[in-house]
Image (cartoon, rainbow, N blue to C red; front, side, top):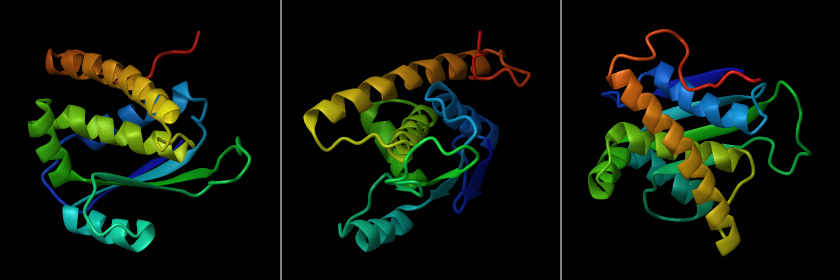
Length: 165
């Protein structure tokens, strides 16, 4: 698995290592650990442009995911799932609004984006509940990771990814 990260804005909210840990957690748990993806961390203006151009919605958004395998029968090993674009300024403002850390909000947006790449959606009420349940499951793991990291744990590359038994 390769996770390519492009940072078009600064400052950082999470290191590349932590971003990869969050995304790898979801991919491994969902059975897609051999797939690649790209994460682009950018600004509101760029997300507004993408939202208008590809979704016909003339406003900014927090995260957009472009699945390259949409409609393809999965799994196809060693393939690229697609691209996730996240607005860092939007992540920061949403963190203040939701009273969470910017790190947690960025993790939530990455989880949301990768779930979209894997075919999950939130158009119908049943889909909303499934995505929310999965987001909370992965966010809980991320909270434990961030807490342990802040307390001095996870100094090696143990990170979020559990060992398969």
